[in-house]
Image 1 (cartoon, rainbow, N blue to C red):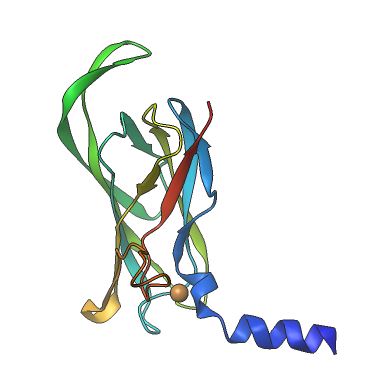
Image 2 (image 1 turned 90 degrees about the vertical axis):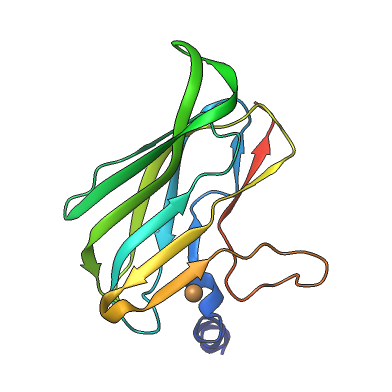
Length: 164
Ligand SMILES: [Cu+2]
């Protein structure tokens, strides 16, 4: 009976399969590996692109290469240069996209990057993601929960900054 209930719960919660991060928290002011988990396509269509917008304050973002996917990185200037491991950091990736696949709707994959987190423990970073699929379908994972909408339909992946 317990097993049946668990199965029913899984079937009833597609929310568990949105585009989400593999970790809820990372140390502030450090380098961390994070992975974007893609649990399904766009309403049944296979995924052909995952486009991530890096939040303000991220000092570095480098995608892990992925067989079958081309990577595009757009750099942007950092408003206030910050000290990095090799001198002052004046620019960082503003967005990173993987294009290729396709990743069938029924399959699961992860898109990994290394990021430098801002030294702002207690803050939560938001990573809006645009998921593109075959046939021109898209799914934007861009919504942020607030008092009026505690459980948005298409939440953006988030990362809490903990003590370093
Ligand atoms: Cu979902």
